[in-house]
Length: 242
Image (cartoon, rainbow, N blue to C red; front, side):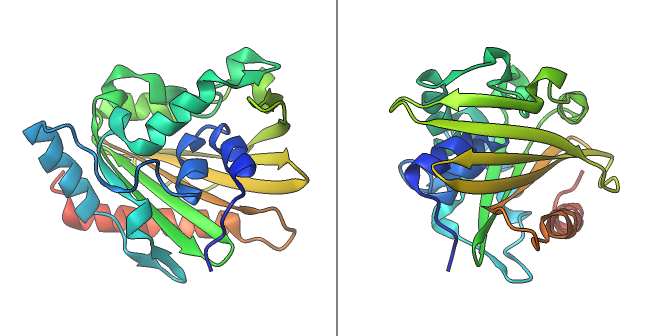
């Protein structure tokens, strides 16, 4: 059974940044999945190509079609949902609101075609995002590390509840033309949730893989993150003519 975060925990995880997307997809995109493109022909074709390049299964992790979507990145239901969440959330360190995904505010990213695929593996959720961004923008996303002061911060939700975050870098083997990995550990409502994310560049495609699940000593999130991203990259290189 797929790990389903409670609404408050999902909101807290969404604020972690990359994810942004992961917390929202764990409970399903706002308004459902599917094609959310705004009708731009070039964007539709590019988003469809990215979706074709997505994996459908990796080991025990199977894609959940109703929690996956494609279209212009800034118009994805999960992105819009998290944008609204940010507007009603206060941080003790305001500059950390986009600590781990500052690249998500770049116009070249907001206007780019994208595909988001969500996978379920027992209690864990894997999210894989592909964005048709210029190579320079993709490299900028990989190079942008969280601010040093954002290694820990606290968020207060609209209902007054709080959640704490700890952000740390992970030293993993490079995947694609460039990559960077980090972990976000969240404490909210008595629950501990861990999210491991890798941001990578494959030519002019920006990719991110996130693994989200309950914190536990025996988790294999680093192995899953690396293995999934490696397989996803191989699939992209087979399908996309880049």
